[in-house]
Length: 169
Image (cartoon, rainbow, N blue to C red; front, side, top):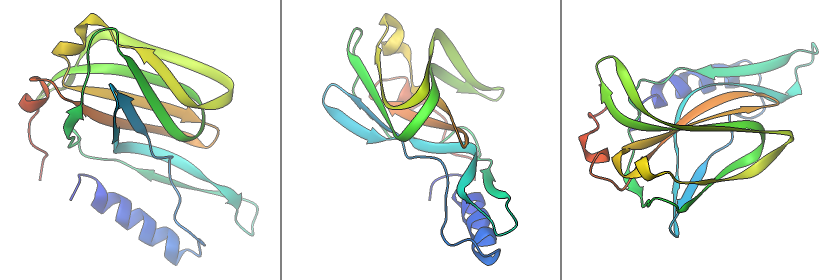
């Protein structure tokens, strides 16, 4: 069971009992590189429901996940390769950073990071991978959309990914 599922399940159950017609949350992200596609692991987020309640208010679902996120070390990478991130819904800002290691103080990011914006929002974002990609264990991907923000991680098929600590229990 992935980290944070308990928090998400509790929040979803609360919304269902509060009269929500369906569960909602941030869009699912997929990451593609060198012909392989993997779904990103959901982290903390706050996302508003599209429809308003009968009182005219919009509902929001927020969940805090335990870090480090559990990832599969499956996305193949190489310097100069194109990385494609699909968000499943149009988002206005996408930020991507490289996680080198995770210590007791938290994730240690490498120097490379990119932030791109789109006033209307986009579903597909492309990045050229830097020379430091071989030292990275995972990608830290944050999005900001019209209805909220979300953080995800994706593990890379690198030796550094195998050194990530196991999830907290």
